[in-house]
Image 1: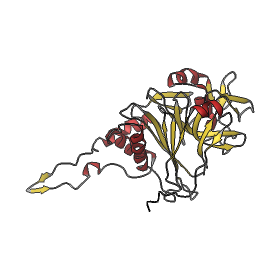
Image 2: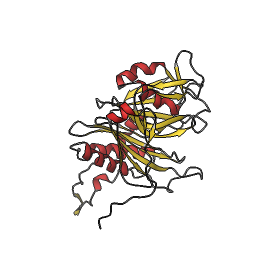
Image 3: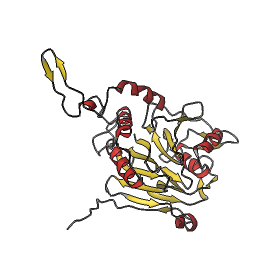
Image 4: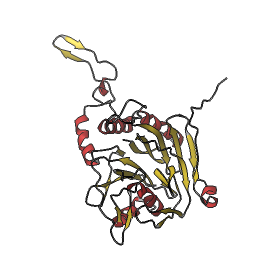
Length: 329
């Protein structure tokens, strides 16, 4: 599951945001990884280095801090989303190349690239390998959405012919099917509009429209297809935020439109998929805004000069797991 989008405020502030929808509880918190963070490659046990500092939603699994989304000190940002039945990884490592499991890809991506242009060149030598050495054992099927300081938005999908980097013209990504399918499917929803339809005569009877009837065909479910359509429409039609502060509020409202409550969506009788957190990343001002499921407070972590220059070890900012309130009396 999961929904992600990029966004730009009128003042030029640029963002990448996402919901994390999953049944396996990740226990993620806002996490800072310093420059030259050392991590152990799950495939060969060798030490890798992430040159650039990263803030994302992370947790420590075994020897490594892993992040499911994040941005680096140069404003390159990404989020990994589930890509079931579509992700095709390499069956074996490739000699002389960068070989990782899917969950490690973000560490390579944000740790070694300043921009999407650099990713375009460097990704040619990167291979995600099918393996049972991932965080949950079996490698998770994933694809990634990216933006950078320019505001360009791309996706990376493993489709069996390597990692395909493709521009995302609608600035939204969800889950399976692939991006091309979702964009083609938009043509089925051209009848959705924010304006109420006008009244219409049927014989001698004037039928008066009900409120919000322009949105009558907007899908309301939680499938990847429904969430994609809703998010594209809301992103296109909500009033554009004037600055970064207003943008965070606007984006959180968009994410609320696809946030999955706990217990309403299960697979094969297992644990329910639910929105474990919302994450909004301001890549212009280098700030992360984190909203966990159990505590709807907005927690902010900024990539300050002090973090960059003085913090030499990973730092996890643990947030409260119980709802907090701002008492007015």
